[in-house]
Amino acid sequence: MFSRYGFGLFLALAGLSVTIRFNRIATDMARRQQAFIRFQREEVQLFIRSLQPRLRDIRYPQTADPEILGETLDRNIGIYRELLGQINLLLEKFKTIEWE
Image 1: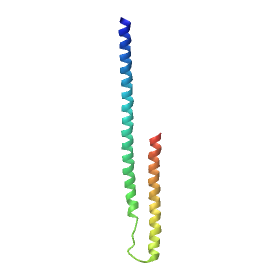
Image 2: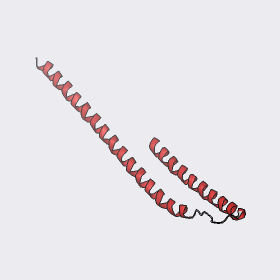
Image 3: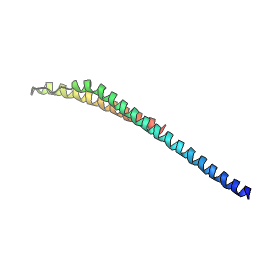
Image 4: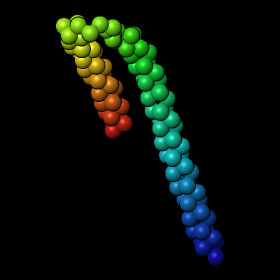
């Protein structure tokens, strides 16, 4: 009789232990996810701050001179390419960190 109750108690304690373990794992995963979200938010904010001066460099000429328009367009395209490169690096960084 005692062994039956002892075995039941053992199963109850084992079940409780497993439940506590899974709860701890779920809590750790939630903390990591929140930390990753905070990291992404901070990285994006830093990126936007670094982006603002580059966006101010983009000029729109007031003249209709094709030569000036062409030079300005080439310069602006270069700035846009650089910005797209930075955006791709930021996205790649998030992708790499997420899968580690």
